[in-house]
Image (cartoon, rainbow, N blue to C red; front, side):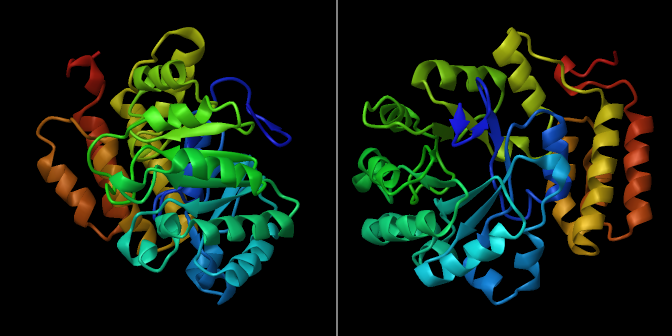
Length: 335
């Protein structure tokens, strides 16, 4: 699969952009485990052009994580075009437009998935961005606003005509948010539409290697994007890639390796986000890194409430000692 001049080969697996999650500290770990493409957290065009500190910080990209894309969202074309110029300064491999975020405060302003209620503006904005930059422009969106307006087949064609180089489709409507199951049927219809000449990337409920292969095989997508299933489980990229290319699923890491990963992630989170944000944003990851450990409630509570760096590190080391040799997916036996 290629996005303009970027060749990802067969079966590419991308890390989805996620607010308060896909900062450089997490993206680097996912890249180490085999993510073919990573994206910034989604960035508000209004926040960026007003020089909002947090929005500008989100633009930072490490050389080690490339290829990397910047994802922007907004409801105003002029603001988006200004934001594109700022994003170009970090020299990403591509720009992605978010037409899929379902969060109420964003979609109700007409940004993110709110654009699904104003297709003419969506297309006008896309054309304007494509014409304003030499970077490849891609789009991430959903099946439609609600069950009565699943218009992604027609919308995908129109976005292609507007000049995008690839499209990622999440298999839910805006009104579904993240509830229910992702429906990949229309993603497959888009991918197998003879009029579509650009790559189609599927997203939604990719929870592991077997599901990933099924989506490739059943719907013929060019790539897949993993979102929430990677939180606290960055090795999912290694598992998926190995299974897709060899038919073998690597074992879940031993507990000691998970502790090493969590410590590295935590320290880098503090470098990139500082205190207290770096601590707050690690809590969701911590909870998932060690999900499934027996008799873990007290330790988990300490990880999710402590504001002391050394105490958090000591707690992680306690996990290493207490659960040495433990592999969760092995059914709980000590290997």
